[in-house]
Amino acid sequence: MPSYVNIGARVGSGTMVDTLATVGSCAQIGERVHLRAAVGIGGVLASQRHPGHRGGRTLIFSRPW
Image 1: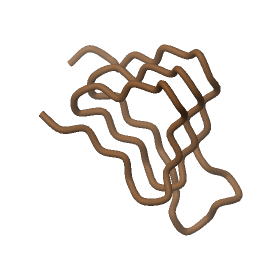
Image 2: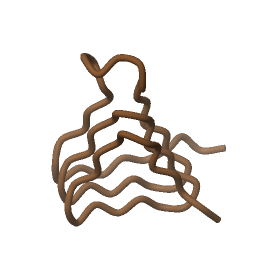
Image 3: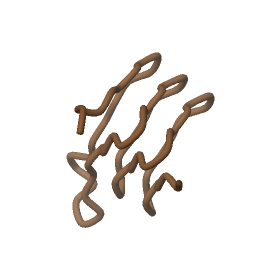
């Protein structure tokens, strides 16, 4: 199953994006972050003033189905 990093998104060194995770356009993910399965990080391509941002050394879980 794929994961997606949309155009304009920035993903830091050592970051792991699991199955079905999505990083939105212009979102910024720090270094050594682990995005678990089915996580969605929002971002907006039209406006770069307020992108979705997650710092380094972070573990982000999704909600159970």
